Amino acid sequence: MTKSTAPLRSGLRLMAVHAHPDDESSKGAATLARYVDEGAEVLVCTMTGGERGDVLNPAMDRPEVWADLPRLRREEMDRAREILGVRQSFLGFVDSGLPKDGEELPAGCFALEPLETASRPLVEAIRTFRPHVVVTYDENGGYPHPDHIKTHQVSAEAFAAAGDPERYPGTGEPWQPLKLYYTLAFSKAYFRAIYEAMTAAGLDSPHGEVLKELADVEEKWEITTQVECAEWFPTRLKALLAHTTQVNPDGPERSCPLQIEQRAWPTEDYHLARSQVDTAFPEDDLFAGITPDPAPAADGAARRAG
View 1 (spheres, rainbow, N blue to C red):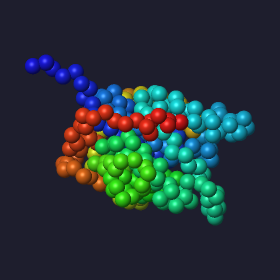
View 2 (tube, one colour):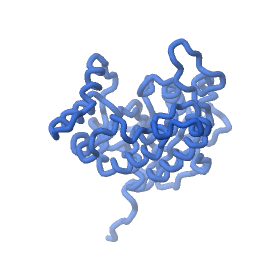
View 3 (cartoon, rainbow, N blue to C red):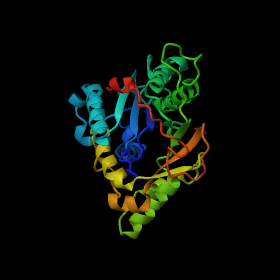
């Protein structure tokens, strides 16, 4: 019998739904890179352009950068997309910014869009790309940024509606994704493992202070799925650093040497929120329980990549 040369993940498709450029590189990027290398099709849907974001890299904190931030963030996204090997599509909404206490959200921003208006482009993207798996944030957005919370709401709505022929007419043939995951990028267990590994190596770790801040925080979602992807941590870091306005390469978040992180916490972690297929916990694969689709994926959504 001739051995198959088909890629391991051939016929499988994953969609990651994020609020801003750079979110795809800080939440689950090594998983995406692994699945692309193994033959899956991966599409990142970015709900906004990050137009109202800050400049978080001191080396880029210059007037001309602030003035050109919308264009720069799209360029950064394009570089990160190429590094990760994914497809990417901007879904056309305007960043809401992160208002200070008492400030109102700006008119016309993503967070203020009616749910059906905000969900319609994502329903169309799901019906076009036909993902088996959708990955997004929990109802708190991973952290309470208005665009992250809205991204959760839109993702949940689109996951539920995309397979219903009566809903969102004019957005393509119905398609029901099989699994919906929440990213759990930074758990207490993760910070504890990194802190202990750095300390054991004789390094100062800022993660001890993070653990103190999280001491009284209740973690609502259990980790159901851990994807081994340490081999792709260098790719993840390279993609993250491509967002030069958003990432300080010398910041405390990057204080842990890559080799130590790979040993201490070699996975990216998720919570399976909804499933149309049987699976058993704990999982080590977002595609667990899913049979690959032999038909080629339509790629209209990907052709609208920003």
